Length: 144
Image (cartoon, rainbow, N blue to C red; front, side, top):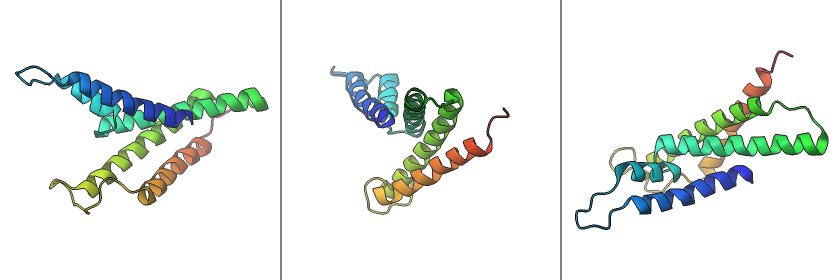
């Protein structure tokens, strides 16, 4: 829930930032850095989608580790787990962005006629990516 909240919150903030960056003047000059930042927070470009989903995943993992420490008294390496989860989230964000671009087409990519990456494709992409990140975290375990 924490990770989803971060991603959704960033998306809502991105829409606001894009709106603020639009010019209402007669010259029609949008503030390009603000527009790019808003698009990034909204997951509309590759670096933004990777960053937002990476931070969302790391935040969710940190919350889960914190709960396990408090409730179950487990010994967790929060920073390590957050780093692996964040990397997997960034990779998943990149894969989902690429899938969306492939489906949307727009003349730049192979178009399928669908809008966005459908859930039946996004869910397995996320599962494989996060699973690989979790396996790497486990297999490359700390030396202690």
